Image: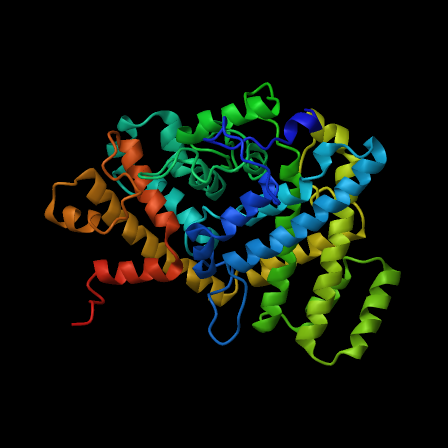
Length: 438
């Protein structure tokens, strides 16, 4: 792959259009377009890890995405500084931070309500519901069926950004090829997802990705999967840094983790000298939350520096498509040791905390019920109850698609767009637990 070809301002659906020169570059326009969009605004009411706030404000999908974008921009700049020392000041390096900032902003935009458990619920619904495979699978291709049973938020984000929904323009958000490619962490179809079940695009959007990959010069592996666009590694690292470190901070605010535990674990990210200097500075602040916030900022800075160094070390492998793993996962420095300690603590104490499990249990019940109702409606639209329910589905979702795959996708498009609160409200109404005020 070649840097000059990988950075491309061509817009999906507007390939022949050339905007007049503006004060913003094309990738800044991507960023602004996302900020002003409804799907981005809805992220404020979608769970990140902990339940949406009561008296204590914790991260939601919106604040997480903003922070990932901020970290991604800084990381991209750090990498570009190193590349300029190595290759000179090439024009293709100028917009990296803008591309990464936009990609980071929308990396979770297709995730359904109730955090990662919502994503798992959709896949398990199709895989585990009695009779569903017998009824649906004969009407779908193997790839279409795997799209459902392995439902992926990453692939759904790509669909949301690129699909022409009813009444909308071609190309979806009409974003640049480079920004779109930078969010596809798993550049292959569900047929190649393997044991982890991860993939980057549904069958319906595969031709779009293939067209983009050809224009950007993204190569393919012998098994048919694509190489990652190099900027994916930066977006992924920014996400890895933010969710792991910010989850620690949220857990501290909610008293899931005590101050001493968080200080000790974050301190493992630094060598002994820096750890002592960082802990010494905490003596100037008595508020435990401010102490943890300071350590968090130092930790993020450390991981940004280390991830940038890893990218620069592995540049040739990344361009050749032979790099394995993630930038953060491959850190062999003290920062890598500390990150793995944070991860182990999170899985042991945070992701199985009672409040987190309560959200997952409730979310599973709500989404399973909504899937029952909505799928019955699109598959049997002539029923009285179906007509009533389909009248509530926004017109942009093609519930009357000519094929079963399209009908099921319209349900998943609608469900994934819901906020936690909207999904709960619809669940209550469909089950007669709440009525409009009379």
